[in-house]
Image (cartoon, rainbow, N blue to C red):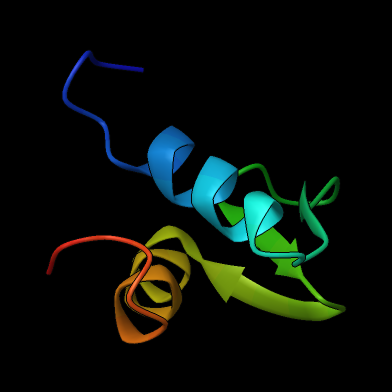
Length: 55
């Protein structure tokens, strides 16, 4: 994971907003967000869409 990787910030922002976020065990490139499987890009889009991160 690089220093400029926005995923950890997006995960922390979503969790702080009350989302349940966890890595998808079967595929480490995926995330489970409130029960929905998302890619890292979709997770970032969700955080941006909710106004939790700058786009």
